Length: 310
Ligand SMILES: O=C(O)CCC(=O)C(=O)O
Image (tube, rainbow, N blue to C red; front, side, top):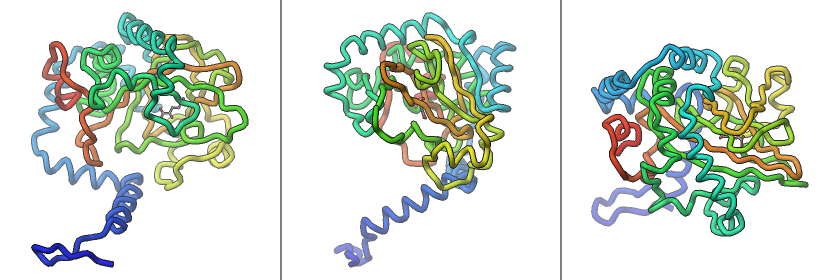
């Protein structure tokens, strides 16, 4: 049935048509055709990219950051444990550990309910869904080394899209689901995630972040399949391409999760894993901007404001 606008007498597209259109656009954007959307949206903001690149160039640079950026570009991942500020990682760990000590109280209130193996512990730090920009989780994501490494890879000042703390716990007798299965992130065309392990990840039982570097992940770039089993993936790559990040607490790494197939949180009984994630994309976002995720608190530079779109 078509509904008609009483003033214009024009048909109003019904909800089903809109959701079919959104679905089609979503499939389109997942493939390399999504670059057309990106280019079209960029052309609507002439000068914006040049301005962001000007800000990126104001950041300090170091040869080891440039080397990390090149590795991120070539392989899709890089270990940045020795390049990030240790004191900022420790501040993230302190907040996280205080949340875990109140696990029962906080998991009762959690809003992010669909992943039974993930508990989101930061909901209480949000005001209208937004983090204060002086929150240790935000400060870690804004440090110059992170912005430079990701920015040089993107050839653009990145946009910080989200910060997240997740406690992954065992799910005995449940089939693998969501990010426990192989997937690419389709938040945008360029997506990088900066992680910190906040607990030791000693072996497979601790549910390491597991991925396939950008090269061998290539055959999956235009697949419309969303989440895949080991068998589906290994049929194309073989199991040898797989890398598990087994590393001690406070290790930090960046992964191009739009290009590297990945999964994790396959936690075995008696184990758990605490993980910090900051997600960055390249502007302009190919989907409508969600509600602001950050609210200004304390002093902010022009770069901070541009990175958080404040
Ligand atoms: O839990 C994990 O290790 C996987 C996380 C993941 O898939 C993601 O952040 O996109």
